[in-house]
Length: 274
Ligand code: HXC
Image 1 (spheres, rainbow, N blue to C red):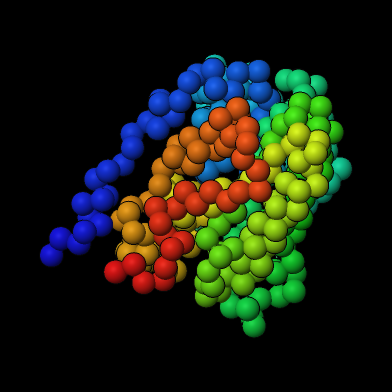
Image 2: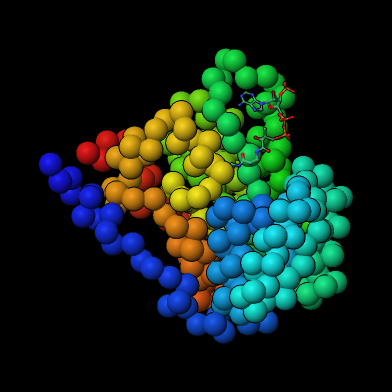
């Protein structure tokens, strides 16, 4: 019984960033929240390989230090200062530090997120607020802190969304509300900041290998269920998100703003891919 998507699963693109020019983001400085791990570290490494210098931000200094070494090994100048995206002053200090070390930030990535499974009627008010504060308000604080730099550089901001913004998921009401908010924030900023030359887009991942999010979500749901929900029959590698982020954030994306990019193997298309 060979399911059609077992064949599709063979078609992984190895080293997608290898197809991009190492000069694609030359002269750019990226600031990435949640850059210490997962999708956002994949984006940081993609940017580094495309010639950008990269600043990462997260709550845990030791995690940032380890990630910074990985990014620096790819030839980028790297900066980091720990901050919680829920704290606008600390976040501003992290962006300012990045700019003082590397130069004006021209690419901001709002990637930091929090997630857990919880029934809507059982989670505490603080539990719901925590995810909205990290995901949605954190994304706003990131955009706000980067704004003066993005205005000077005519830069861009990329929001990391999720399929939860589009389709209902059990026990993800807090995440769905936050991520749907991010999508509208992305569009509103594209409208307001377009005249400043600032672009604003979102990347919508499906399941990605090796991420904390999927270790949290695939546990309760089961990996098989997730595989069946992806028409292409496999999870993404973080590099595949990184490659698309590099395309959108640099000169190849110069006329792209207010857009959502689903890099999800088609998992957002339907609830019944079988
Ligand atoms: C119910 C929970 C809970 C759980 C925490 N809470 N975990 N409630 N079920 N499993 C409640 C707590 O009881 C508390 O409420 C409130 O949430 C805040 O919890 P804290 O632990 O104090 O918060 P904090 O230390 O700030 O940690 C934030 C966090 C944590 C979101 C709860 O999980 C975290 O740091 N996550 C970051 C990493 C992460 O989640 N990455 C995955 C992102 S993936 P009370 O009322 O008790 O005070 C993603 C999209 C995935 O976002 C998409 C895949 C397709």
